[in-house]
Amino acid sequence: MIEGTVVRVDAHTTPPRLHVRADSTILSIIVRPETAIFTSEVATGRGGAASLDQIYRGDFVRVTIDPSGYATAIRASYRELSGRLDGLGGRALYLADGQVFRLADEALIIVDGREATRDLLRQGMDVTLRLNPQTNEVLAVRATSPVPPPRLPRIVPAPPVIEWVSVNAPGPLGIGDTLVVSVRGTPGGEAWFDIARVERGVRMVEGPVGRYTGRYTIRPGEAVGAGAVTVRLRVAGVETTRVADTVTVDGLPPEFVRRVPEPDSVVRSAQPSIAVWFNDRGPSGVNPGTVLTALYGAYSVWCVRRYDSTRAGALALFTCFLCGFVVLTIVGVHFRGPNWVFYWSPADWPKH
Image (cartoon, rainbow, N blue to C red):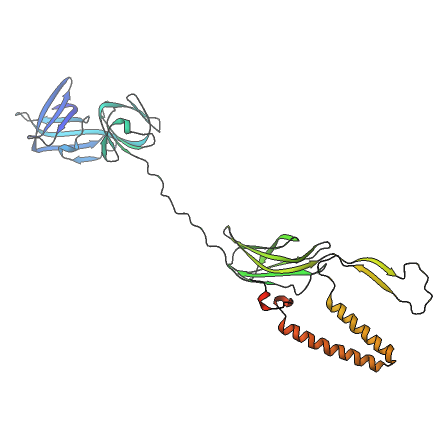
């Protein structure tokens, strides 16, 4: 029986030989095809029958020799452990868990499946060490470079879709009027609408699914002529914007500048003339319907006084009604645009 450390393995020579250092002597042992060879890992007991090329330099072996000097049985043992390389210093090999081992001068270094030199070992590599179980000297290192995580493609969610927008603003909005904006689009998001130069970020509530509704009440002092109503719909961090319509907001009441008769004045006529002058500060201007109605009324009163007949006044009102009906019909059929806004031509309608 010979015990020692493997110095070299000549598995492909004729005959195959195993060189073993026993004490201070190196013995060259001939291995026959019928030689029984076993390997075992001392920590786990893993192993079994093996071939000669599965024995590595540095393994501890027990060799049984027959009287002719040939090996009849070889039992090789080794220690193996795995870890992450933390660094090299001289002949010391440091693992990330704090263990330190001595690296043999002629240790076998394999990096990513190829034989290499120790200077190719890098911190962070995963290593498997093969050690002599008697001396704990590292005789083989199998290292694998860390695999970077796969680069996943950036997934950009599709922008939300706004199918249609409705704005209930048939005319100028005054103090206390409520602007209602409705949107149908991608469900499960958040929606707001803005009124140019008046208010921004009016929150809309979803309900039913995919329909968002928001309301805004005009306050005193707010005014804008043809201000754009812009709707914003955001789903999963992606936002879609759409200009819905234009509205006129008139939150500035008229300013009275003169009146006749003046306050606290003395009136001697039984039928005094009363007149009021005012300055319209808002963008909506004077309501033409109100002016037209006043003209109709004034014409009827003039007819009653001119002809001293209530029948003439009634005929004047009927004539005004007939004219107004004709004018309203023509405007409503040919010049009415979205939200009952006056347009000279459908080509002037806002683009949605």
